[in-house]
Length: 213
Ligand code: SF4
Image (cartoon, rainbow, N blue to C red; front, side, top):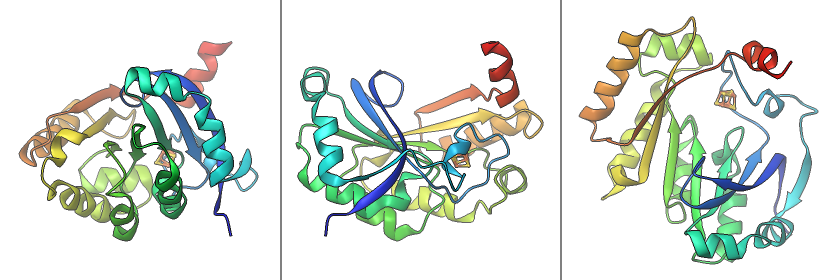
């Protein structure tokens, strides 16, 4: 039977926003974290599923941009929500996808190790949002423990050449961390051997709404 997965959306023709070259972002429903300022809250809502797709349907959809992928070295970025929760679906997709497509995973790493193990042979690049590596800040912001995120990051880094394939996103989170907290997170990441760090400001959902008025 063909595997299916619930999606909150697919975005085509993305350039330099989530991976190398032109990418198609496939965003899954569902996430184990409960971030205070979730920008994709649709992924948490029971009625937030845009559509359910099987692997063959997704392949057909993504194939529309094959020429862009081949010309730019791009491919498919899986995000969400938390894409690792759909690791079997992604694996089945990758088994049938063109080898030239670059597969990128946007993840919090707050998942069971088995998902990461399943995806390891297929993913070229990881974009990891660690929130903040202070356990108290992480817990307050996500309502979950930092432990599995950190253990999974260490596990990924135990693979040869992995540090070059990882970009870690470190947000300044209003009302949750300070510049000193962020600096401490970056220092810890450097100590772990990570050099590709994307430090940025979270914009509160209400501010995004205001800017659209
Ligand atoms: S990890 Fe992302 S999708 Fe999940 S709750 Fe946090 S912001 Fe939302």
